[in-house]
Amino acid sequence: MITLHHLNQSRSKRILWLLEELGQAYQVKAYQRDKVTFLAPPELTAIHPLGKSPVIEHNDLVIAESGAITEYLINQFASHLAPESNSTDYVSYIQWLHFAESSAMLPLLLRLFVEKDGCQTNFMAGYADIEVAKVIGYLNASLEGKRYLVADKLTGADIMMSFVIELLAARGELAKYPNLERYYKQLNTHSGFTRASEIEAQQNTL
Ligand SMILES: N[C@@H](CCC(=O)N[C@@H](CS)C(=O)NCC(=O)O)C(=O)O
Image (tube, rainbow, N blue to C red):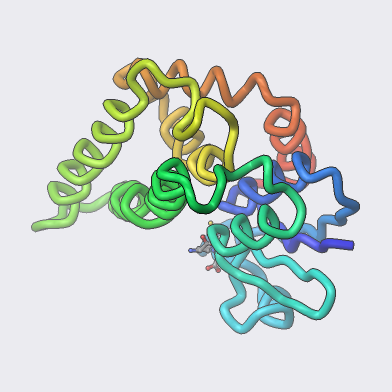
């Protein structure tokens, strides 16, 4: 049995979707963010010292980091969600999988934090806007004429990227990026994705 420690409104949504695709038994332990600090509750540190989500438990393993969890679960249970490991598609696959949590997330989070603070910045707001335009523009251009990021099929890279796309969708920004808008519709054709959204909505009290 796989256990997902799921925090509401978090990257853990990626793993909810992935678990829906695996066809393996799993359970969700739900945690709620503090409404003021937006931090996870202290109980999560009993599972992993960082106290962040997602974290999974499987057999005797405790695994943090959505990218690592995605690679681990696909290797264990769902080879169809990755290209062949010695192919050039595999190189694109790991590039996009890691882009989703590194290059793409940082500027989006910087922008969010600046907005949450609601004050004038000397540097951060301008930097975040330039970087969002750069990385999201790159992603949009890379999806020209494509249904999925790699190999014309759903892979773990799309599941990782879905959280980035959902952040943009929640802000009504997809209209600026036609390929991302089309890609978001494509992701929504997967029942595992819509099911993950339903589970998240049931858990979320924010
Ligand atoms: N790089 C990590 C980031 C994990 C992370 O920062 N999770 C956030 C939710 S999206 C969290 O748990 N925040 C609450 C806290 O830090 O207290 C991953 O991809 O899993």
